Length: 434
Ligand code: AMP
Ligand code: MG
Image (cartoon, rainbow, N blue to C red):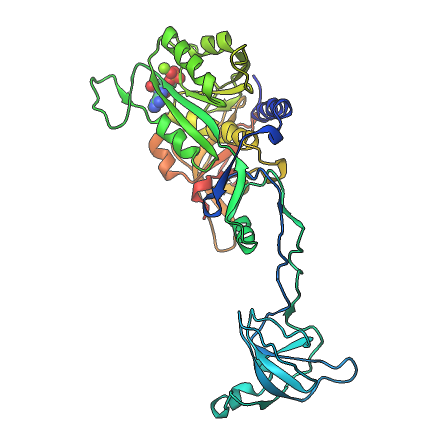
């Protein structure tokens, strides 16, 4: 059985082949308003059309003046006007004179330094001043040339590449693009991801259960939630009964339009688990079964739907085991990272899985042979150390645990039982991080 790590590598290398065969430069793009571009993947590089700052700008509230090239800084200044944010001072200024200036205001071109208001006697004078006329202030600190001035173009130079293709747009990128005045971004067209659930026992949420053998389909809503932060359009192919023809029909239909197909359940070895046969018939199974718990019967495959009528990139297939916890773990471990890469995110900008070291407060039961993802609750003490408590039962149908847990304890393949007080690796759930 393949290990979790090797399977991740295998999935990524199939995606790299796909990205070579169908380069990102040929992908369809869409324009999205900047405010809605979060988590989309940039399809065109962004070159700055402006300098930032656009001019020399004051970083402080204070006074701008001319610092002579030789000699000490002046002791007093005659203040002859103001430069406010958005309203520059445009008159001539000579040595010995200064202007009151505010943070974000343009530094008059003749001036080469700024002194902070707090380093003058301005606040002592404030109540007695008539600011419509020139007034004198005393400087209480020596000043160095260039102090408190943000230079034109020191952050961004016009023409500079500021964001490259493959950037996963984050709030910082939106801030930068907005500073450059960009109202829309060109991003890759979201991937179409088909989702289907299989099982005669399933019924969709919102409908009435018909008999005692039925259960609600919780996996499709869970997958929808897990995929929500990705640039994908999820197409729900509903619940497919445990029937070979219907399974074949739905999979054949889905792969005509989808870039990726994800199924839940029906990949075990039961008499009514038809997906494995259907995938092998319509496509290729690259990997089946992975040495992990939960989630062993996981399928990874691919469909080539090129025919004389249709030519499209291969469709990736992820067959998730039906138990709700297995579905969730496999989606987090394999599907989401793969979808980010397939969506065009550059390798350097793929989401990072945070891993921490924590002390287990109770013993952990573990048999060697599979990598385990045990649900657990971690917290941090005043000294900054993390401790973690595994939840009592680790069966893959324990859905209530998922709302109580805030991390997985990740136990290596060959690990055996662990005593209380030992260090373990944990992966906090992304949704518990602020
Ligand atoms: P299977 O992989 O079909 O053997 O299913 C494994 C277990 O997961 C069974 O107990 C199923 O009833 C359950 N299961 C399968 N699909 C779903 C689903 N969509 N929502 C909730 N439970 C499911
Ligand atoms: Mg089933």
